Amino acid sequence: MWIGIFILCLTSIFFLGTGISIRRGNISLIHNYHIKNVKTEDKINYGKMFSKGMFAIAIGLLISAAFIYSEFTIIGLCTIFASLAIGIIFMNKAKKNL
Image 1 (cartoon, rainbow, N blue to C red):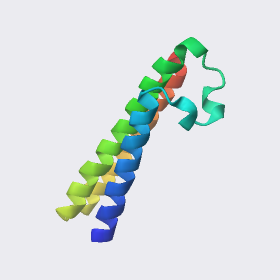
Image 2: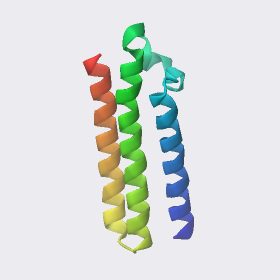
Image 3: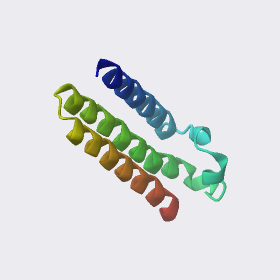
Image 4: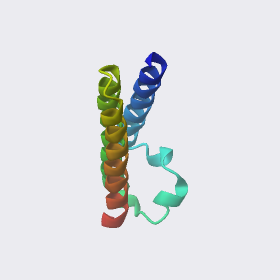
């Protein structure tokens, strides 16, 4: 149980750090395929919108770690899947809006 919580927290920190870096303008962390049709003047806005998805995933992983620590494993797993879905929706929305 402790190893799973530790892995969730480390993964959350990774997503949070990557999201902060992308939000500050380092969109080179996003795969080239996803940014090839984004105009240069829209890249900063795209990074900001994409980072919201990263933040949603990071927060969801931290919340799920808290649920798993409280031994509500099913709720923790549902939280992981919900945060992944929300994060992917934000990332797709960023692509469609620009």
